[in-house]
Structure formats: structure tokens, C-alpha cells
Length: 162
Image (cartoon, rainbow, N blue to C red; front, side, top):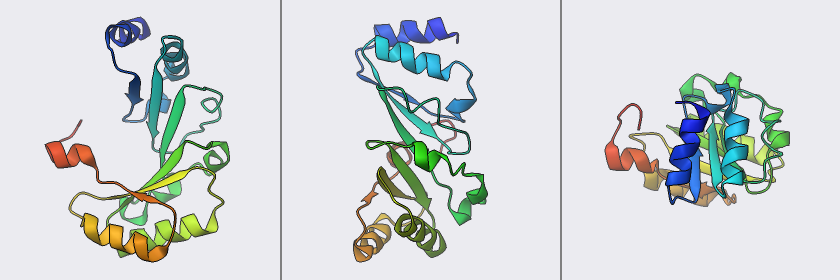
């Protein structure tokens, strides 16, 4: 779809929020313009990113909330994080860890404890990981983080593209 076609859909929708997700939305060269135009149309945008590309051009956008992944060891992608993004994130943005096991949890908790988080933190159980286990471990940690299930997977299961 062209940017104009996407904007037609946005204008026709009563939705207050738009979610840009992936693949990786930062790879779309018109993503900043889309967010700006959505803001001009009175919409707020949630940008879900894998965190491997710079967010610098995005943090000037007022109608934007950033949801950035910090990859855990079980993903095999933990080295992909563009660490400068942690300096770009603002209050109201958040980072997200998908936790599959104790190693991932330890990694996430140490990351949180060692960082100066001015933004929110969310932990999500990977598909097949017990939500109660993760919630109890977070409570034991006494850290100010949220635990949220991957709601789309609870509703539709492990379906690509959902």
C-alpha cells in the first residue's frame, strides 16, 4: 500500500490508536512521515520495534509511544540491541522482554537492575511459558515492572502474521 492509501484507511477508521508492528517498521522509509501524518489526523501511534535500529528520528514525535524489545538469550538475538536507543526512549515509552525460562528472566532482571529506567518495563511469557510462574518471580524481585501475556497468542494461538 502507498502512504496515501494507508492514510485513507486511517481517515476512515474511528480508532484513536494505530499500531505499527512488523517485521520491523523502522525499515519502512516512510514510517516517520506516516506517524507525522497520523498525528495530524488526530491519531496516536504505538510503534513496536525489535530495538536493533536507531530510534533517534522517532523520539521527536509527540503522538508516538515506543514499545521496544530487548531480546533475551533464548531468542538468540540479544546482541542485536542498538544500545543508544535506551538513551532515546522517553517517559511513556517502554521496553519489553519476552521470557522463556529462568535464564531469560535472570537476564531481564539484571538488565533492569543495572539500568536507569526512565521508561516502563514489560515482561511477557514466551508462548508455552507459565504466566503465573513469571508473575510470581517478578513479585519476588520487588521491581516496578508489568507482566502481560501475549494476548494475540492467547486469542489466536501461534499463527504467523497475527
